[in-house]
Amino acid sequence: MSTLPRASELGLIGCHVCGLVCRDIRAPDAACPRCGSALHRRKSASYSKTWALLIAAFLVYLPANLLPITRTVSLGDVDDNTILTGVVELWVKGSPYLAVIVFTASIVVPVLKFFALGLLLISSRRRSQWAQRQRAKLFRLVEFIGYWSMLDVFVVALLTALVQFGFFSQVEPLPGVVFFGLTVVITMLASMSFDPRLIWDGREFDD
Amino acid sequence: MPVQGVKPKIAPPTLWICEHCDTVYHRRELACGEVARCARCDAILARHHSIGVRGMLALVLTAMIAFVQANIWPIVTLGLNGQMISTTLWGCIVMMWREHTQVVAVIVACTLFFVPIGKMLLLGWVLLYARTGRRAPGFRLAMVTLYRIGPWTMSEVFVLGTLVAIVKANMYFDVIPDAGIFAYGVLMLIITAFSSIDVRRLWDLTEERPA
Image (cartoon, rainbow over all chains, first blue to last red; front, top):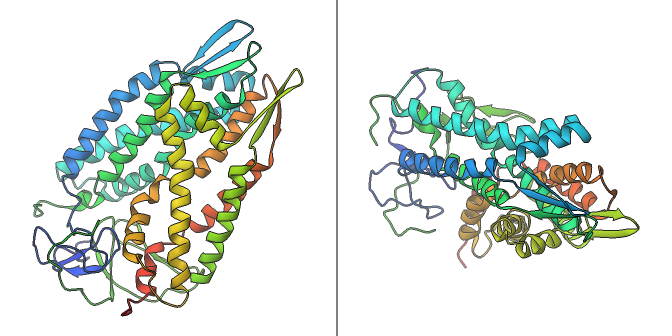
């Protein structure tokens, strides 16, 4: 494993935007000669940015789950649904398979993101060499599945536009859905600001 | 964003750097269907490109046609007591705006309309010139923008969302899927076909020529 050379050891730097391989001149304002983007050895302030976004995401995640996301009014009957009660309703009356998909996208994926990014931040900060390959894969999983959480937001948008039968039946969005949409956007920003190269930076690396 | 800074020398174009762990490799030609993975972190370094520039352009044009249809045709129709209501994507966006969830309206408009259309137009523009190995005017800005907006399209999530909405609505209403959802299905297939293509190879396939 240690025989694989890393860019920093060879005095090279890869452009994060266009992938061009350049010589690392160690200037603070180096720019990529091909695409003009700023060259960094690592994403700038990755730890503090990711922590800040992760905490912000968690703060909006609580109301996203506790507050109702939709109100259904039919024949004067008012019924508010949170994300969890929506899943239960789908399980009982509709399709259990689809309920599992919605549960995964809306509950499992955000929770997994919080735990995974927290774990990656703490272990990389401590320069841990534990399960590096698995941690690298975990990060790619988080990046890949992250945006599927937007599922419930789109469902609410569609149902709101469709179920407009006045007195007979009507669906309205409630503030929970705003918080949920924001959670997804902020967790996506958090995983984008984490630099997976940090997983592999041993004790000798200081940047 | 172009930065006015010191421009370092370009290393010989015979190297790959793994984006996920910074390991350096010598480039080599890949056989058909072959995928080069990083020995350290197992991330994908490069793939064999079975689709050329013309093929990519064809995919983008097909995606544009499907996108127009997905947006002008209604997606689903609901029926209750003989009353029918159908909606398009923009119907959803306008409704969310009116119902005081403007944040959601903006998220939906960006991830399902503005970013996808921006991506297709930029790619189409760049590919149009790349057919003959040229760089389009504004190539650099287009490529950097494509990289930045890359993760913010969610059309495939919307297709699944429509499916969930149909099943939910079917508990209480008559549901008729409309043409829009099929156009979205086609769009989803094209996005999947495109997902294995690294657009950044256009940097290597094109050359800057003096005007």
